[in-house]
Length: 288
Image 1: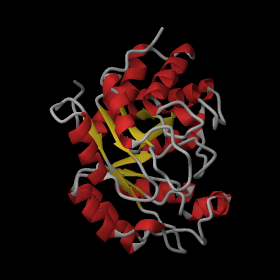
Image 2: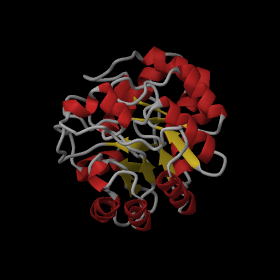
Image 3: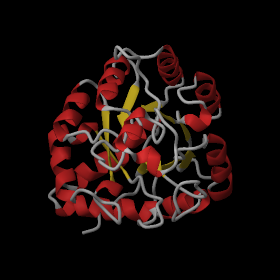
Image 4: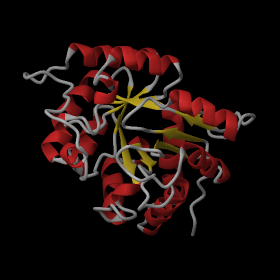
């Protein structure tokens, strides 16, 4: 069976050109694929530059008269935009960014993991907390801006301890999403129990196709299904994190991921909740 993904929203779509990796699609191709698949939205993610203005342009080329389809952008708080930089975040949000990611490839966590070094990024990496574990003033400013604009705060690749600090501070009054939560190639490789605990604190848990499908997979689909059962479908979003040349194109990859989870025993309704209803709610959209 192929799961019906009409109305899906991929909150984590990479595209080219990219300074670090070969990509399978450019932004226009990613959006066109999503539109043709009947999706409701796609969020363009770059580690290196804000994407809201690009998303606006893509929307006007690919789907200028389609109010039922959204191409959205965001910003990563990495070294290329000055790190956790409230001024850069404010501009991105005023241009329509829907997601603000805390540091990803420039994070202290990825520096410690060796991910940054593989990409030639300098240390010591960016943290969102001080030496005592308290949120930095600039982090609090960014959180306040995300809350003011009703956007989504994504945790990026920061450490597990930073995840807990951010979620405790922000989830009571804003929308916080754990970025590719169980991915072990980048970030803190959160366990299913940690995901469930953070969800209980108010976070949403993003589980991505790249973790278990394609050339960079490190887990099996049944392991993802186990995490979903542990957290509960009401707090999970399904995205792809695709766009790598070695992997399926994002829209097609989301379908493959959904079908694999169905084969693991999740129902069509449960998968649609995670791929369609939940991410659309985070973006403030109704399903078509």
